[in-house]
Length: 348
Ligand code: SF4
Image 1 (cartoon, protein in one colour):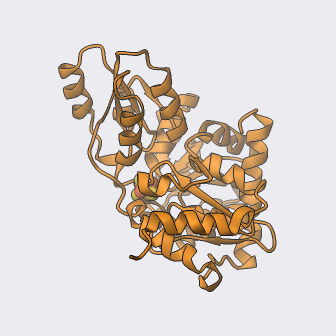
Image 2: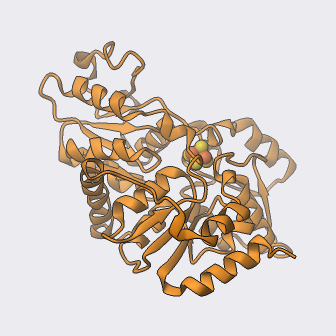
């Protein structure tokens, strides 16, 4: 009888030993997640890369995450993803040529606008940010990085997630009148730079198709049914959803929030379903963790245990994630600025 995907992965890990590291994002399903040497949110996983000695890194997540790992990997290290078609709709909303055109437009009058991209973006976009003195942020460090970017120049272009931008501005106290969601779909030609003179944060109009489906009405209905229950959401949700919740933060923040919730309480979680289901299982019988919505990310779901097993069956024949030096160097610069700013602020 053929070996199961589980057994093939266990055998490959045993054979490759320290030459292999498997990283998995919190949104992966249990059958993949259980094989991870390191699991975490985007910031935790990015921070891990520099300390890894394995010659092969298999990234169980979506392509922008594997590209980030490839950018940060040491010479001689190869990064693989079990399905290169596992993209991210949010990252695709900001193609690099359009980002470059918009930055040029914003800077046309000599204003030193600093681009700051959410890690959910293509490597080419991170490279554009690196070239223009900008950086990268994750949902765990967005406040630190927006404050950093504001201190570097004369305004910030935040991309591609408008909800994370608006929530971070709210948290930092950037008034609504000093930020502006941009119309980018004419390659920036309709952007009136004179009208943006008083705007500190200019916001790309992208959003996550999963988190933007969560509505305040879902929280109201949940609270009506579960008086005294708690609600925690991801900052890719709209500001209206964040305002209706008790807490908001990255996947790691959400995990910590559920951990800290008192025994016997019910917590509704507004993020991708795989992670919520894992938390519900972990705390079953102690506290009740329920999803605010039942949707998973279809791209995260493209990484399956079978695909991971197939890749590990013969890793030498697999094609690693390729990021050319013209993109890798400026993207690495942008990411390094983020990691250094976070370390300076005491964040991992
Ligand atoms: S959950 Fe949203 S932001 Fe995350 S990978 Fe899926 S589409 Fe992209």
